[in-house]
Image (cartoon, rainbow over all chains, first blue to last red; front, side):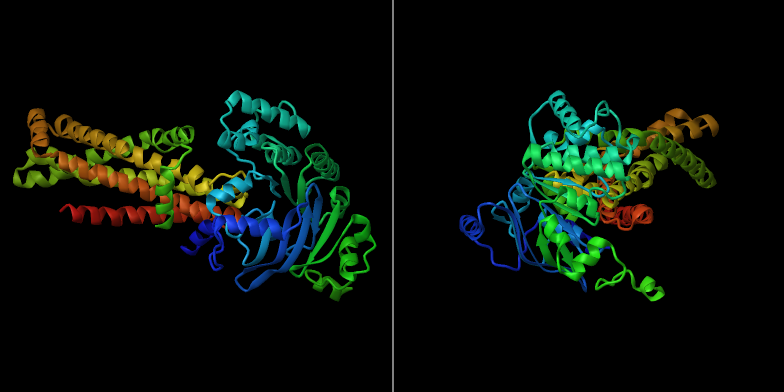
Length: 294
Length: 234
């Protein structure tokens, strides 16, 4: 039972195996090594869970204000990738830069400061059951600002309007439909006006109309708030709608990056099989038994 | 132990979330009062009956009050309150935090720049630490009253002698030791419940397992810690 503790305490701590640079030197090195218009940069990022080597040298660059969508099959490590970016999981090797800052060495306090730049929409919305809708949306404001409850509630109502919800602020999350919960979660993610939004399977579990509502909201967020975003999905309709560029993750590596048009016309057979959803092709994982039947 | 240490260090670090602390005091303390009172009352009453049965054999019925008071304050008050609160609150902590874990709510706290240990565990830990001694005092008082009721009203003991014997042989140290135990039990209940909740895996089944483990483990640790504290002050 005790190994679980490592999980709790590893999240906020830096990788200690590498020598720690003095803070000022580190910042100078960080800012000099990456282009100014790069918001997020991953270099040779590796992550394993025991013998399962999930990320095997991921390289990815996301420009400021860009909407990057990472596609890939189930279990390929898409969620692991964005959880490494926001520090929910600690990568084993490689470098991740967020807004010019290398994240491996961050202390708990530095992580908390950096995470104020992030908003994240979870696959299962992750709303706090015990709080009302407006308390959920205003959660970070209550924790990190000196605003009164009235002011926080009014900001929460404003953010809820931005995602198309009205008169739900006093309801509990359990009283909402799946699509509404997703939108409340999005309102919570944008409450602190973050510079970076991460979307974990934003349309999973929603009907096609509600999925499109979420897609349009994501596009609107980018246009209105000028945020940089990374969305992970296997929903190609969603990917084409919200992406400036699409990256495909396969066997722990990014094998293709391009605009939606470039991805559609990619000569890579793996990409083509995935975006068309074909059973026959180089991707075999999960389809072995049906391929034998065919 | 690491979680315990981490919780202790975060208690004194601002911001101080009094709203959450009061909410937990209500959950852990106020809502536990009925169950602790009932437990204390019936324990005191049965103690009086049993000791009377034994003591009558060598004409020592007058000491029933002493036995009830000493047993309640030193042992049964804190231990039974601890076990009852462990069943009621430790399981709830494990279930609530476990559900938060499997539904990504704890990850959401991290992304909202909030330390889950500070936000979730510290208020629960403080609430358990504060309310357990208070609940124990309630159990002690109601247990002694229950013993008095049975001895005087049912078994016909002399009320003056009962009170006199209780007062003469009960030291403040007996009460302090009981309250110290209660504080330790409160910490055990909160840390074990929260730890099991934080490390829940595997959906609803995982939440169930964490809840069971929280109750079993904290109950066992309460009984083990109780022995060592008693032995230390013996």
